[in-house]
Image (tube, rainbow over all chains, first blue to last red; front, side, top):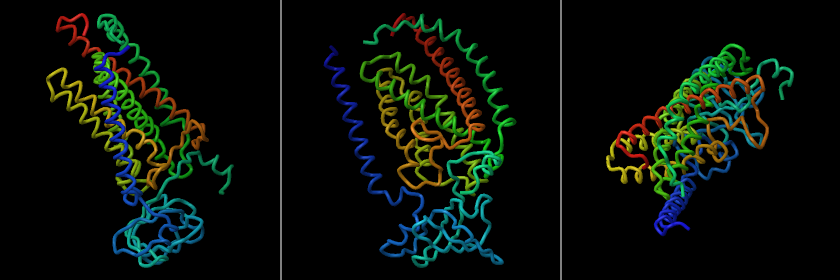
Length: 139
Length: 235
């Protein structure tokens, strides 16, 4: 019912789309480690070797793990399976708190110890007024 | 198929509709801003910074949505050589681009007080930047190429290539670890925004949709005038 040209153009577009999707998929697949913004403590644990490169570790700040010394903040990042100790000197963002998400950027000393040069607070997808939060209670 | 295109009939709509859409937009925007800036509560964690979300999230949705439509109409215009579809795509692009930029800028403004950084090269933010680049490419291509046949082909291909980036942007937060939070409003699973914040978000989305519709109609109207001025009753 359509002309030959219409069919050819349809085929042309389909081929472009399929090849682009396939190549983008393969590129992203092979760049997987660079596409992710941070690694979890569990991923750090199974690292084969420890690079001197700057990396990011993300997870939750473990409850009651923050200790503040004169110019140093120590805390533990957990993904509820594994943990990593973090040391950081500098100002932390306002939303940095125990039990909340965090991304630390810096250098890995060993598989349990991370020296952060920058701390970012990770916000979760929950939005609610304070009264509602109180009613739900802290979980 | 899709051959019956009469600029005069469409023109009758596009020349009158904008003023009604503008009126509706102002009404909905007023209600939306009142809800978002005054009536809605502050967030338990980020307090008043949450209000940026009422501009950021609708802008991001709309820029992604418009690009999807733009790509669909481009497919139609490429395969069926339907010139009306290419005019529709062309008229959709400016408002999509503007909302894309708004989403990026408001995201940066929100990111500084909450994350502690203006910008992060995570998958969501980077793919949103790529979307903006595709919008820019698309709009530029329309300006650069004068030849009608050529410009339609080139812009269609840009739109279709850019469309591959749309699902990547949408699902980036699920596929990879990102600094950006995952989706709060979900069709299939639970929505994690409290109803008192969901209402202003919905109204602002409606307002921005009306604004895009307004810009689209005005742009489309101009394109139709250009067609009429060339003395053509049909394309």
